[in-house]
Length: 210
Image 1 (cartoon, rainbow, N blue to C red):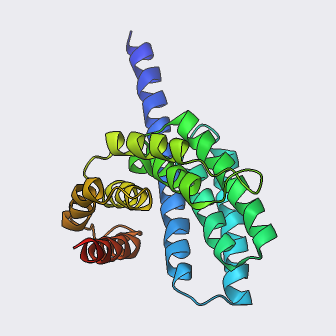
Image 2 (cartoon, rainbow, N blue to C red):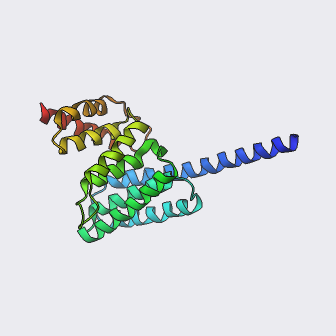
Image 3 (cartoon, rainbow, N blue to C red):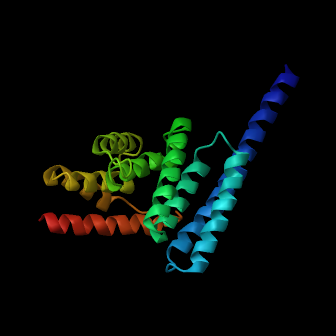
């Protein structure tokens, strides 16, 4: 019995250590990505993103059963798409979509449902077939699932509110935009600046409605 307890403890400790190692690496890469997003589009910025893609791909390979590295890789690719030509950008967006779907298949609640939010946004932002995969029904499905995972989140509420606005449903959008605006931003989060930007967009959207 003592030997069995020792083996169970060893397994749990190893899993915790592995998770800690992964989280530390993901957090470090995420911090670099967040800082680089603030830089203007230059060859230097592109090279940094390419290195970050390489770094997070190593983490994805090492931890194939974890959703967080997949989510971060998709975020880096989508940021790179902002600077790319339309053709290259579409390829990056499609790759990000595949990563997000895989992450959701592993754990839809990872990173507070951020894969659900991002995939929902992609579905209503990109063009529909035959150019891309845009689909408002799919968008709403993913965004509502994201709200189930993180009902008080800034991103989940803001982007569903934005989606409703784009569908001409202003009255329905107001409560979600207000909730996004009223949520507290964690200053220790690598995405704190992104969350504050989303709140500013929510404030602007509400001003336009009224």
